[in-house]
Image (cartoon, rainbow, N blue to C red):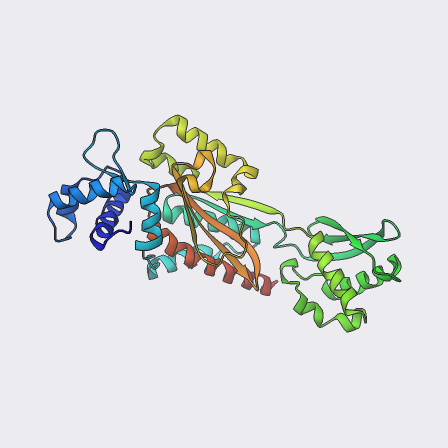
Length: 344
């Protein structure tokens, strides 16, 4: 059964009030604070229907209601209008980053801190450790008559390798000629900036066989796996939320967030995601997250995923504000990173 316009307005009013107050919302409160043009008795009847339909819950024996996961989901998908970041907030973010662009680590850590400061929630930023790395050299080592090992080394000392399937008639010495020429043209270039379009410019100077050249490029990126680094901010903000006054509940979530390998699982797997995504409560499929929501954005450049930003807090989050803020931040951080690499 679809919600009619009046039920939608009442549900929206309840969620907005609960986000602010953290207290169950009653019909008299909605009638007094929101001009819906109906009596408290009518609102009470509609709230009862919304509860029966699964959009609201009644905690304890209180006359007030709180949103359910289903209610929040309907609100986010159908009722919410993201709040645009104000000019003052834009200026605050821009000033914050001005002296924090010395290296990529600082950019990402600053992103986590500024978001935590503005949203008063936990912020997680997941980024590739390879973003700041520049190619130092490429080498091939023999493995057997059909395969070689491609080794990629960066200026940070990171060494990655992969199995390279040799083409008939091509031996390791031939491959190392390609590697030396690739190194000549690409040494000192940030790994994030190396793409096929760039390599197409050099292929005639490196090898006549375009397919062999492309295979070398694909192997180089396979060797240089994008390992993930996690940056956090605002963990202690949770202690100020009524939902986490329960010490055991707070401890469980804190422990979860301190385990980097586990916390990385908070992020959605879809690297192609273009928009801000919201997962509410059990939608995250992680037990410590059942009373929390995650709002996440992916930032990209030239179809390459630079990283992901997520804001984590109680299901009673300021969804409209945070979604608008993340939409701005993913564009701003992408611009900063592109500018950083251009400068380098």
